[in-house]
Image 1 (cartoon, rainbow, N blue to C red):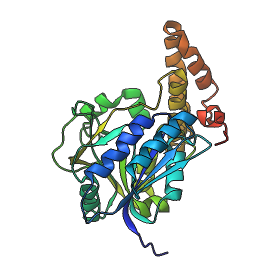
Image 2 (image 1 turned 45 degrees about the vertical axis):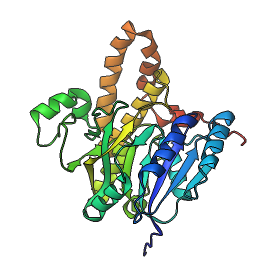
Image 3 (image 1 turned 30 degrees about the vertical axis):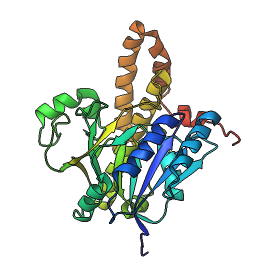
Image 4 (image 1 turned 60 degrees about the horizontal axis):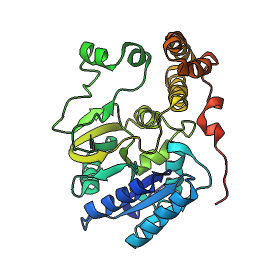
Amino acid sequence: MEYYPKIDVSCIIINYNTAKYTFEAVKSIIDNNTAIDLTFEIIVIDNNSEKNDFEHLESQINILNSDCVKLIRSNFNHGFGGGNMLGVHYASNSRYYAFINNDTLQVTKNCLKLLRDFMLNTPNAGICSPQMLDENKNFRVTIDHFASLPREILKRAILEKLFPSKYLNRKTTYKSPQKVNYVQGSFMFIDALSFNKIGGFDTNLFLYYEESDLSLRLLKNLNKDTYLIPDAEYIHYKSKSIQRNINIKIEQKIALLYYIEKHHGWFAKKILNTHFVIRYFFSSLIKPKYWKLWLVLLAGAPLSLSLKQKQKINPL
């Protein structure tokens, strides 16, 4: 099937009760990407925010009066992967998708063009990402290793020291493009045709491990690699739309164990889950809030306990 892209990039952003950040992210993309040889659009998916938050965002976007911005309101919280897939549904036929968190700001001038040019010149690239910075423009870890039993039990730092050729140092400041396992989901620039071929995000994952799963499937199925592009930079305020609590930690463990079983098999999941059951039993003796997590792990951390199953359809 032939694929004829109409524009270069469809930028997809999810808003969830953080209209202020979303508007600034949209404005940042428009202000910083002015190259005349690049065409792009911005699709904002409101993931069933409170009515006043959506109305505030809608009024701010209307002030921009930009034809390149589409605002879509969902009556259901689809999570990260599902929300982005909804954005893909409303996107034009694009050569690339840029999945960008709403709590980000563009730093590098014409960042989208820089990433597009890299992808055009690197046929084996499926995903690339700029270097992430914090709000003070200091280095922030952008790359990571695929989840596995060694990573979860031995931990990243030990693996990086013991096997440096296999486990790239995440905290190094790189000067040239680096092939990596995966990049943070806060800014992923993706070849649209490859993304479409593998079916996009796995929407069983509600909040975590979507980017790792996507990079691994692109590598396994299409031999497409993921790259960090240090010459491009962006600010990520990080987790402004997610309030950290025990339910979020439970969601993270459910997603991790689902990912492990999907890519490494049932037995690997069983080993890791047993490790967590023992670990969080003792943690719960010190921090009682972990008993809720321990009970979920004891039940095998099934997807039926995911936050995805607790979402309600609300009238618009």
